[in-house]
Image 1 (spheres, rainbow, N blue to C red):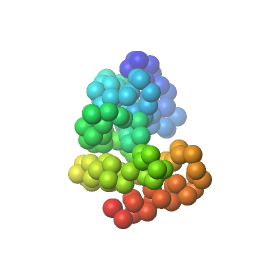
Image 2 (image 1 turned 60 degrees about the vertical axis):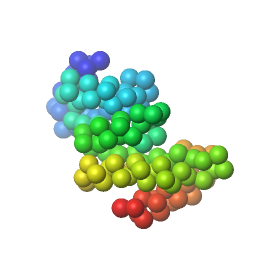
Image 3 (image 1 turned 90 degrees about the horizontal axis):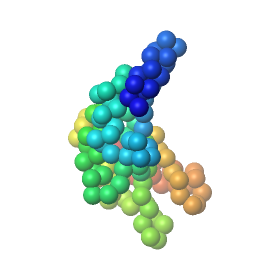
Length: 130
């Protein structure tokens, strides 16, 4: 896979485009896999999506990938009552702050309710925190 990413990165470079990869699906579902792709291909960086890491290693996965990230997808988990899990979101934002990340934050909402209301709810937390 890393050789295919290197080939894609070379094509992108010829077109003036830097190729990134996101922590998405099984190929890049762990920081270990993301960092392998970062170090063994010519991609220009990562996209860390808060919602795509899970389990007990989630915080560590975010902590390890943010330094290589050119973009971060800020996705909040939902509590059973439908509200956003604000403490978990703030913990993730704190990892971004600790890494001194200064790139773009993209707010992502994939909940069942109105998309714009969900985006604005997450945006309020991000603006309060940062």
